[in-house]
Image (cartoon, rainbow, N blue to C red):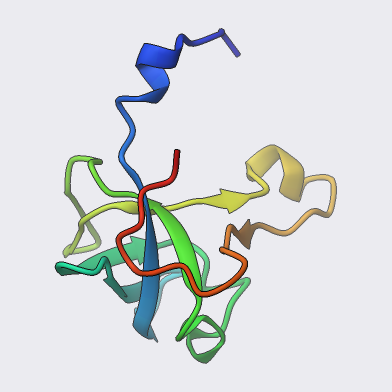
Length: 113
């Protein structure tokens, strides 16, 4: 991968969100998550259904990219992206993706810097 500058990094609005609800989108490997960002609730569509049961995620503090342009995924609008450790190439090595969570009671909407 190529190097980026600090200016590139600061373009990302990384925030703490609290998962308020999660449900499996039938016939897919997707979960529909409702995530509290403190001042608003966002719908996030995430391809982690084969690694997490919806009830495992409710109440978790996750890190998400809040300024990612919304897009439609299987007819549902996703308003951000939850970060995880473990990518496609890691799965081939037996490493399952794990969402990135926050240690402690950090409030929803807190900026990651």
